[in-house]
Image 1 (tube, rainbow, N blue to C red):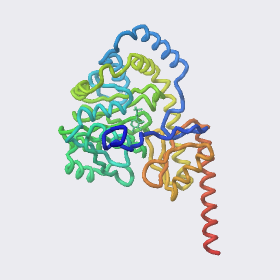
Image 2 (image 1 turned 180 degrees about the vertical axis):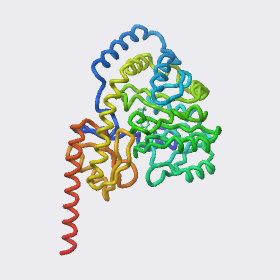
Image 3 (image 1 turned 120 degrees about the vertical axis):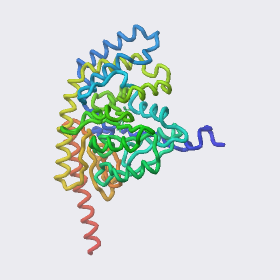
Length: 376
Ligand SMILES: *Cc1c(COP(=O)(O)O)cnc(C)c1O
């Protein structure tokens, strides 16, 4: 028996994580390059100090004040009211996903997503003993509703994960497609629309929050890790029918959200307008990056997120390594041949453009050298 005596299916598995390499330009984990403002960090510091005076007490298990603030914040993205009892928060939306699978997945139950999709979902399915089935998206990375219908009929899923905007492709799904999927799944299961990148969507792209009154089985998740420039905070949340939020209370760890986390999240939310101003400049930079990559003649997926998927490279590993050698770290992810770059500051994107131009030029020279060799 090998030591340590872990579960059979976990033996030899590497923990998830993007390489954290110390290079000058880091565009690989979709972080917001703009940290919180000084006004915001001052408010956070004062809020932490105030919370510290009662650290001898357990935090509010139901995080009532935070849920009310999050409900207020979400109201900007839907014409319908969102009430605090529709909201639930945890340590990052990844913990929200895990809690959803603990409550709605489990042995004998099935979770489904459509690839390419977020690489963490199958891990949480494994950890909760939920059967995992991956269907496929359409060639344009949108949802192929006919294929989805067949999959749902065949697999009868209890949980469907639908990142929109999708990671790693950046694709946002139309509300009609999401609504149709909610109908297909029916009240036997829940449809989790992961809007981790929701704030980055282009003008005219609706949030799935708008659909909440029509579909009781719809769950929309958000995070403060991306738009709110607070990946280090670990705060994610969902909006759904109050009965769904209520069901999670059964599986959450006692006092899962520390009083410090709650205080910091409330402070950050008070500064939403200034944090979202930075989101606007990232969206502009994102659109410019898409245009620039297309002008280079590359294939580029439409993006409603703070990253862009582009390709295709015969040897994407070589392209990724070439950029790294020039001090630019991006992500080797997505379908074979594609690469993903997170949107950074204007300076970081200039460095990325310069490095990619060099890498592509070198690759073309290499291949013309190769072909001249073949000819001779
Ligand atoms: C980054 C990301 C999240 C956010 O995770 P947190 O745990 O909130 O930091 C969720 N879903 C997707 C698809 C992501 O890319």
